[in-house]
Image 1 (cartoon, rainbow, N blue to C red):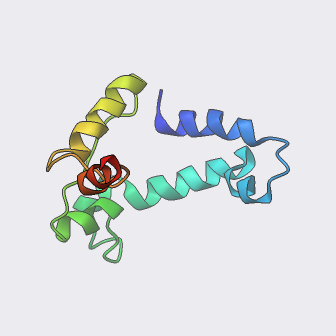
Image 2 (cartoon, helix red, strand yellow):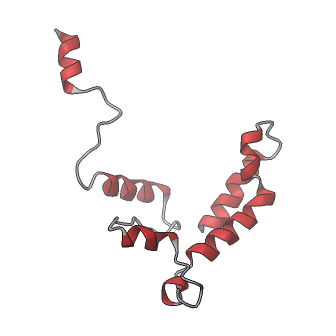
Length: 110
């Protein structure tokens, strides 16, 4: 399933929601957001940036600033996407920012 189809289906869950903060994700506004994203991030923008007034996709900004980009086709199974993201996130070591530190656990144990 393509990303735009996924977003359109997901935004239908917000129909009838009383929460005003979810209004921006309503299906009626989703097509406009997807079109804007595609226009600003299309791969052809790399090749014709000078003709577009120096407009580059978002990824080029990160590449120019030496930040590794995680790219994966959204048509894969959810488990495969999650595992790939986990491997990408943990490529320099596993983050423990949500766990209690070993020192704190030792202190509690004593």
